Amino acid sequence: MQSLAGKVIFITGATSGFGAAFAENFLEKGAKVIATGRRRERLDELKLKKHPCGKNLHILQLDVRDQKAVSSAVNALPKEFADIDILINNAGLALGFGPAMESPLADWEQMVDTNIKGVLYCTHAILPGMIRRGSGHILNIGSVAGTYPYPGGNVYGATKAFVKQFSLNLRADLLGKNIRVTNIEPGMVETEFSVVRFHGNEGKADAVYAGMQPLSAQDIAESVLFCISCPPHVNINALEVMPVNQAFSPFAVHRKSSA
Image (cartoon, rainbow, N blue to C red):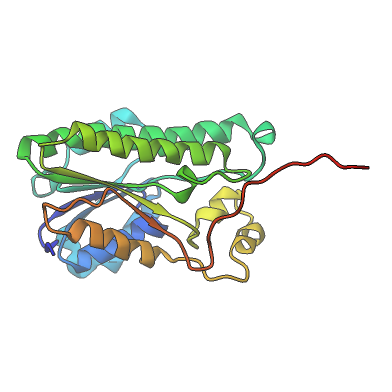
């Protein structure tokens, strides 16, 4: 397995959940981490928490929906963080759980802008450097929602289906470039995800995980660590991870009442 010591890892959405767990794990492994996110106070907390590793942590307030800001931020990285070995496109969200005909268009647009455009902007800005150096790894955080539809998943699932197909198409384009691409597809994980989805309603968020043990952010961090630590000639195309108490259902069939 490869050591992460000295590897430069660019993480989007590092202010909570998966991203924060990734940053902490990789710093402990000796990596140089660029932790990005919109909430500056959360980034400052990470910096303070990881003070002993301060030289290996660069925090960057960034909204991945802003293409010009992404491009400028990547171009302005300090020399010691400029050669990015691993990009983790983690920033993303779900908004709402209602049927399509009741969903606010603004929620749909925000999911598309973050989950799709954010991945495109960061990949477009960082990939050329990887190609010049002849090595790199792009790791996208997808979801089982990109494969298995469910009521209320409408645009969120569609954005993750995009991430899934984009990851596969990147692999096709990058054949022979010595750059790996992986799509991580988690199932139910208890983070701030559901709180955001239900617009801050913690009761609804807690109900999602009631009576079962979901995955944790640390579980996903360990899965990502496995993928990026594999020998250079090994590419994990996709890794689907679910809790034991989550599986699949039969097709739903609507039947007219005989009455």
